Image (cartoon, rainbow, N blue to C red):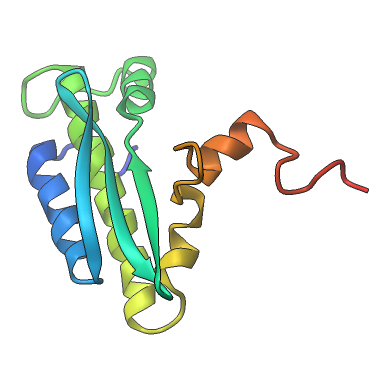
Length: 143
């Protein structure tokens, strides 16, 4: 089963928890981005060695919704599968961020390292989005 698939915690509460966790790590600014009525990403900016760096953490709740439909996962708390997919997706993201920040707190890694795929590059794309669009972006032609 999908992690957190039975959560009752609304996405807005989870997003607030994410923002609170990030705020403990010298974040300069935070923003929530919307896709219609739903939050689609949390973005934040922080100072990395004197350079402002932006990060965008997307939430692809539609992928979870499709899994819920395919696996006919029962709704535990009423509402719609869409609402449950949104709650579940954000809760999984929160758990991932919490685990990653725990590694930062014990000096095993850094925030730029853990959020590297989500670094916003020139033009507004994240590194992950650029790699999906152009898989040779980092590797060149492989020679």
